[in-house]
Image 1 (cartoon, helix red, strand yellow):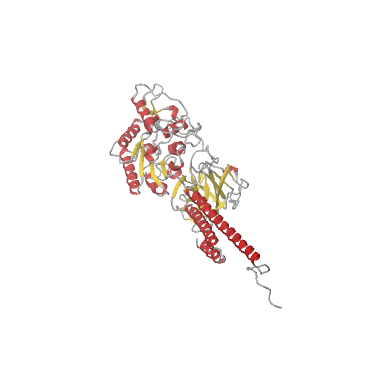
Image 2 (tube, one colour):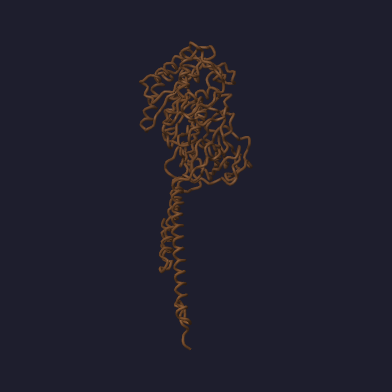
Length: 572
């Protein structure tokens, strides 16, 4: 604004004062309008780095994936909502030594490992530094930086390590490739838009280091965190990493941009809700730290979190019954221990001003190992614990802000069966534990998005057809539960032709927008300035005509008399 005021003053002073008063006013008005437009543009740019951030993508680290040395990693993240600035966060949680990134860049993913040419920009830390060192068992976030991203777009984050580093990674789902890497000693390839120099044998489903992405300048309403285990993570032999989180985001993405939210996946395969003794769970191999321990860093500390969906507890029952040790380890994994852990999570979430919704534990049964994993027994005593936990969750004393009864829709209550405590085979993988894509989809459709303070989102198409068993109370409950997530028929929605649950990575078409009030004001101001300029020109022409008329009359009355506007020649 200061530079524009100087321009206005200098231009005003440069204009002659005589016979140009209107011109001076007109020019000053035009410059003032230019100043207004410039100021608005600067204000618009500054809002893109607004402190109002919301987390739109996460990948919780849960495993140390070996050592690397002077190498480059490229992680791919698909962003569900649009924005104008980003903040990236990286985890060194599973390393006992420091990790140094000498360069980090981000660009728009073209396909696979390739980045759209011309989109790569550098990422800085600590107010402008291109390199950063992360302390052992710690995390770091980048400086906010300008980058316009579109809903459904994927970004490629490349980072180069200096020296030796232990890789903190997220383990899941071999069907999906999320991360690429070079061999040791390849050096800094963060500005390379192609896969040249990367080792194709190191392409992995395990996300390395990148743990969250936050966006600024988004019209979306905030973040819902799904804190869960392998069911939330999307683990399953036919899923291709597809989770109820993906399906729920697909539903929400059908709402208008200003009514959307980001549902971020904080699922960890093998995760428990409560703390167990060492080496009695998968924590030391791939199960991550317990839910009550990671609730703060993996959920409540994230930008823009409004709601937490807690979907943990079934692993507690299995490990407590001796799933890893071969013998029960009470009081771990009991109904009382799980309920206590849930109460702890509820209190901590409320203390941070967020809401927390519980999800009932799904039906499960013994696995024969036909899926390639070792056989797992599910005994009546374990089922009794699961039923007791679900009954407590659904009771008024639990303290949740709401309970999402997904167990009701996943029981064997369809096509003539009426066994609600057993998993319906059409919704599960062969292990009778992890839902397949059809099961993940029906779970997402049973969640009311009104819980999160946004309109009810349209349900996505079901992948298989089922018929609730007539006369079965469990089938009636399943039907009622699924109806909770259904949009009222009177509500107009945007339809979608998507029938297969896949992640969209292409740029969506941009909708046209009408002229905003700032543009209308500018055009009106320009018209006023044009009118004043026209008036000024008209006045000048009239003055010239009158002056010419006076000269003509003087020449007729006094022939030979010099023009009054010219001086007589000096005497010789």
